[in-house]
Length: 239
Image (cartoon, rainbow, N blue to C red; front, side, top):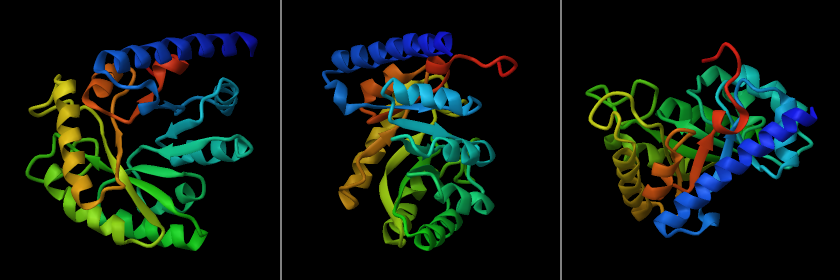
C-alpha cells in the first residue's frame, strides 16, 4: 500500500503542477480551478489514499461501481460527482451519495432527480452536460444536450424542488466541427456559460478537461477539471 500511495502522490503532484502552470500561463489564480479525480474502475482503497493526500472531489460514472464505493468511503470528507450517462432507474441510488450530477441532459432525468432529492431531503447540485457534437437530434454521441436546448433545460432544473443549477459540463467531442479542437470546444462552452449566467447568475461552474486536455480547459476558463488516469494510472486490461 505504501508503494501505491507513493505512486498516486507522485502522479498527483505532476497533475497539480500541470494545473498550476496552465493557470499561470492563463493569468489565473490556482485556486480558481478545482481538481476532481475520476475514480471509476479504481478500488475504494485508492479513494482513501486520495483523501489522505488532500483530494476532496472525486467522480464516478457507473452507479453499480460508485454506490458501494461511496458507502465504503462514507466516513471521508469527500464531495462526490456523478459524471456518466444516468438512466432514470439508477437515480434513487445516485441521489443517495452524489453531491453533484454533472450529466443532466434531458427533462425526464430532471423530473426523476427532483423527486428523489426531495424524498431524500437533499439539495443536489446539477450541471447540464452540453453536447458540442449534437446534430439534428439535439443530442451528442456520448449524451448531452445540444447548445440550443440549454435554456429550456436550465429553466427546468432551476424550478425543480431539491435541485440546484450550478453550471455546465462537456466532454471534448470526437466528431463534428470541434473534433480535435479541444481549446475551441472549451471556449465555446465558456461562451455558453456566459449566456447561461445572464439568466442564472449563480450557475458559475464550468466542468471541462480531462487527463489529456486539462491545459486547454484551464486556458479557456474552466472552473473544474476531471482527471483520472493521469493521477491513478491506466488499469490493466482497460487500455
